[in-house]
Length: 284
Length: 218
Image (tube, rainbow over all chains, first blue to last red; front, side, top):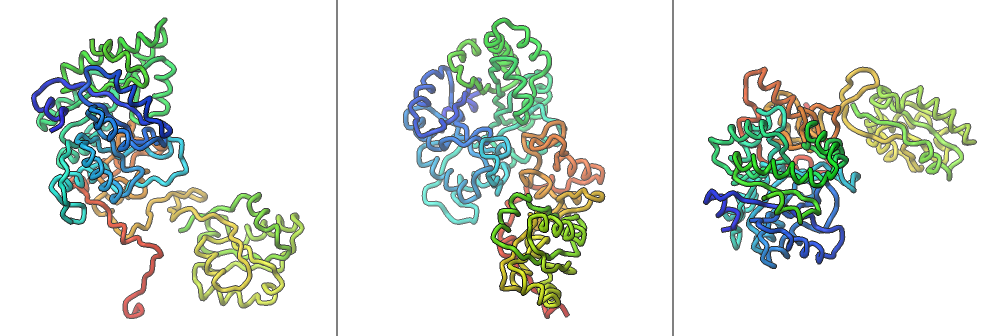
């Protein structure tokens, strides 16, 4: 059993963080960066994040896992068909990777290879279903596996999405398909997270709230314009605009978010984007 | 119908640089309706080619260029002009270009890019609503196709990029899943939300497509 699944099961508040594989084959900086993560249960390894081509998430996750860092392997449907997804999941299991975050993936349009053909042979619900099948010892066509993988599959959600009821229909499908935890898109607004957690309550599936460290007003405007599902509210934009030390203000905002997320959720997922040194300040 | 558009003239100029005498072929079906390969466009192309110091030996607008036999028949009527030409320029969809190229020995230059199977919103405005996937789900999705109108072709609801009911890929585009959900609600049924839709059977779309009516269609 992964530490993540144990801690969530025991009701301990978990903290996850994330790392993006490098653009290139040199893993040394990534392996060094992970050492700065303190008080973290598991580290998400992103999969061609934002549709930008990078070293494979599986390769970095495997190396981290073997070096003793527990990972959450992110896997998207954008770049692989159902055969490649199954192969990669079995490969992940062979490296001892258990935690998964199974995603549809940002559209290729957003990244550095906009001319690439987006695959989406499966969607995230079907990817979860397939993973449940692998865990039951069969592939998608019902063939038996020699060596059954043990996964802790998770899914993503944007709690602030509108229309809420429509978004939640998909959450229900993901739970039916075996999602054992959710990690959320970056949250900024307590009321919308409260509404989401109220709807989640009967499902009894833990939610790890996404907390993004915004280092400047400029970054916030960029996120609002370019990152699907991320909307930094005006009140926070104003705070960042006025701040003499925007990074310190960003850390303060993240710390406040973690504080109210502690009341509502089962964990937080910190996205510090190169400011891993600030994690202890955010968790303080 | 098949929506097509004229290739960039710079590209055509380059492709045609090795030829002096050209025969022009249009199509009276889709390419005419979307103003890419009808009488008018053939005429404009002829004028442009003359400006490029090319000789046009003749032209024809085939009834339906995708009809292989009919294309052969219409081309036969222009045997002399065809013989004079170094190459044919075809303003029809890729399907029409291949009807023509399968009927003549000469080089065939396609002048259009074929884009999609389009519905006509109003004159000059076309929208893709069906991607001919061979495994139709419309009866569960209130008559709105997610395979085509969801940018990712998802089958089980919207992605995390939906913002205020719009698509992450194009903010002008309404999220297909929002439209499906709203129409199902107005029909007071659950439709596709009542089940987890299994992965699509893409073997129905194996290329190249072949179809034959049973008993020869009798």
